Image (cartoon, rainbow, N blue to C red):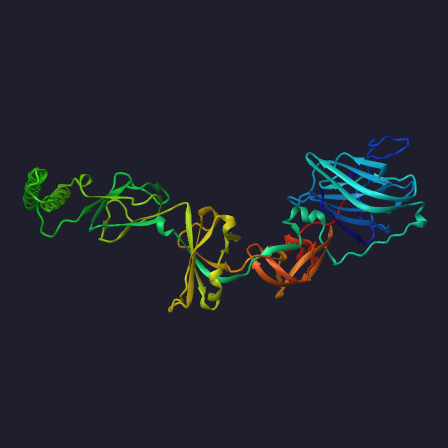
Length: 527
């Protein structure tokens, strides 16, 4: 099922259409002496053909898969008419490089004649000859096949004239005076899109900062002054699991500490630990017999824990003083699973208590913390998502991309005069770099259908918003437009274009250059 738009155009006289090319054509006639598809010998058109005063019929026609732009002289009985048929793929706007083209002349839904060429004469261009045997009205169809591609372009009714003297042409003149040839479109960035109503949402401006989720973020800080040590250093970007070892902090010795004092303190701590262990063992038996309350036993166990910590601390200090720092210290572990997004310490470096050593963030999720000016505050309660420009491309963060609004403030910050909102989204759906800041637009309405074009279709031309409408295969019209709301990659058109028109969505600037007559953007017509 094809979506068909048929633009019937009037062009300048057919000129310089058969330059530098060898044409291979085939033709046949229903009921005639040649079977359908019989090939005719190649004809050389020479190296150059001068301008012709012969008028041409010009058609531009679209299907879901191909665009056809074709020029040919009026059909006269017994006289060959060379069709210059340009075929462009609609998925990438590049020319067909192979394929078979059939031209059908039909009457009463039956094929009266068919003419075939089995390959393009030049990239994207087929040059079949059509020679009709009988005057009258015919339905003209061009059918192209190339692998899985199959498209039929129905150009409507054409007349086969009995002689050249009776030829008349009645075609509407194409809008616009900008000529941008197919050969130029095919080698430069180019795309078109048909204008239609699309669901767009109103949004308000703000400024967003990428952060890690509150429940998927942790900073590992130094518990005391000391030196950092590790057997395997971890770099930013590596993933860690809960309780995974990150390194060891060797506490700094106090001023005036020496080996003798450390040995004495270690033995005192060892004795205190042993006494506490014996006390717990004794009280446990009495508690089991019901001779003492549980409170006595709990106090003894707490004293034991303190004694053990004091022993470990003194042992660590002595080991450090002896130069065996890798065997002592305070173990640093990851409190959450995630990715190391920042490592602020190096082996052997000295750190102060409270210094941030490692920053861990959930690698699957991000938050976008958004500040919105207070004058838009009344709309924030209905926030459903946002859009922003990331790496030059619009990014939409809403339910369709797995994002959700998780926080909306109800109070204006007295210092910044802003309100805040937060959106959670999958890391691959939006900006991923923590701390990055972007201008953001927050959606504050339900979608409504309105005429829209891609934002890339609109260019600033002398302070005016301008789009270029393709009125024919190689003919364009400059239109000044009035813009409305913008929703990510789409922008509303309030005035300037109509539904179902074809607008240049990529390469509009090249069309603008063509309007100035610049030759640098491509080359001339040389069929």
